[in-house]
Length: 105
Image 1 (tube, one colour):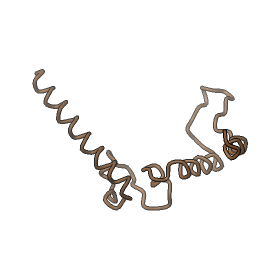
Image 2: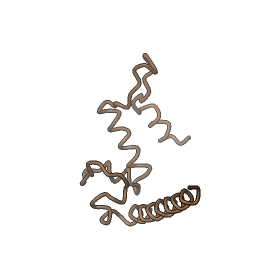
Image 3: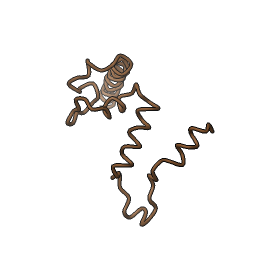
Image 4: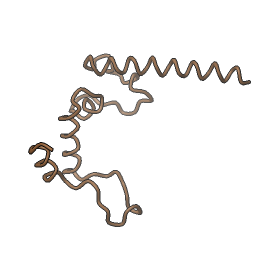
């Protein structure tokens, strides 16, 4: 473990609180925990959809698929390319499943 990793390990907020676990378990984060988590994602995985959504830009309200985000075409190339392939894969799998279901009837 690098010295920087060890320092981060000891300075990070405690994300798991075991008091009354699992009865009071939730995904609620304090501001400190949310800030720390955001910083870690942005530092370790900067060219991902999650990192893009964590930065102060336009954010979708709710969408069924990543490729239906109104600004999907404006995403950086590494992200838009992965979304393009994910959409193709999803459509191919769904077509295949639908055709198999029609044979089973």
